[in-house]
Length: 256
Image (cartoon, rainbow, N blue to C red; front, side, top):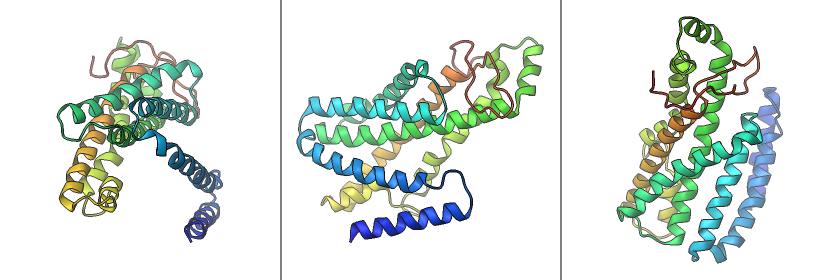
C-alpha cells in the first residue's frame, strides 16, 4: 500500500511540474526514487549503527560529505570549494549539537546524536544552497552597485555587504517560518516521530523545541560562514551566470 501511495503522489508531482513546463520535471520523481532506495539502505544500516558511537560518528561524517556534494552541484562550484563547504557544514552543525548535549537537554547517546546531528546537517545544507543561489543572483543583477562602490574606493566586501545581508536574510526564511508556525501550520517531524515512538506530548514538544532552536542557530552560523567565504567578490559573474565569483578576502560580512 505504501508503494502504491508513493507512486501515485510522485506521478501527480511529475504531471503538475510537466504541465507547468518547469525545469527538469523528472527531478522530483527521481528524488522520490532516491529517497526510497536511500531510506531502505539507511534502515538496514541503522540496525547496527544507532548503538555504536564510532559508527554514528562515521555516519555523520558521510552525511557532511554528501551534503557538501549537493551544495557544490547546486551552486556549480568546483572541487576546490569542497573543503570550505565541508568545513562550514561541519562547524555550523557541531556547535548546536555540542550545546544540546553539553547542557544535558537531551540524553547523550549515539541514537540521539545521530538524530539531532542529521537534522542540523540537512538544515545547514539547505541554508547553504539558498544562500549561494540568492547571493550569486544578487551579484549578477546588481553588479553596477558593486562597481560603483569599488569606484569610490570601497573594499570588495564593503561593496557587496548590502547584497550579502539580503541573501543571508533570504536563506533564513524557511527555518524561521517553520519555527514561527510550528503547532499552528505544521507538525514537525521530530515531534511526530517522538509521539510515534511512545513519548508523551510534553516530552515530544520539548524535544521539538530543542531541534527548532538548533536549526535556527545552525542556519545563522551557516549564513555567517557563507558570507565570510563568498561575501567579497574579486571577480563579478557575467550577465546570466549565477555561479559564485571568486572571493577577494576572508573577513566577516559585518566588517566594513
